[in-house]
Image (cartoon, rainbow, N blue to C red):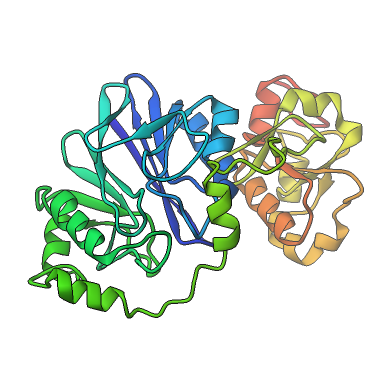
Length: 358
């Protein structure tokens, strides 16, 4: 079975796509964003997938790719277009190449015009295609820098994308209006730049007079992406908190291991966000825990002891996850959630104060 996820980076309006083969666990990522590396690796772990390849559709001007960083952290290969000018990739792709992941594969189609090295990736059964910036939803990539060429882009769209079945779902590299997916048939009919009966000449005239400002990050993004996102120092950034062995989740939370917590209770502040009757109830509470019910936490955040890292806890982990988010929004950075809450704590045989022995 195909595993598919569409991920979004708010700052650059970039879509990242995860495709995996459930039988083998092999997966690929298309157009990953440097700042979202932690999110993407957390999702891979939660889905039980092994990243085998990182694919960029082109050398981006609006964000830095995480291809190099993902290779360091997962061992995945970096795949880019042979015509991209990018250095440091493991494989350089050309028209008709296949990118295998388990029993599935993506077919490579060269779609230059936005840049020289633009690629689109077509799923083996032609049910899905990933068009990068070549074709957007009711739009297309600009052609006024990075060797852009309106005529080439028009021909790329019509010969390599519009030649797919009308039912093929198209997933773009960006969208700035909250749109997520379109189809070949829709774009052929409704795309105001390149659909319908619009000629190459009309298209080129339109594209050559857009008058858009350059992307804000172009001076940073392009040089970095020409090296697969490798930092100038060549060092892998370490953004993992060092105060405890924590696990980052796709939900955006740090989780703490109960065994480590029990052995280091004096080094943290446990914040219990249950109601008072639960705190003193059958499950008991963790020694030294500070009680502030979730419903009052926003008004009482000043009471949270922050000279130590904070571990939030509740009955099963849901309310404490909300509490962790509230604390982070209030500027308290060293926060982790006890996933599974007191139910997991008691089931693991860890120390409690009060409660009913089972």
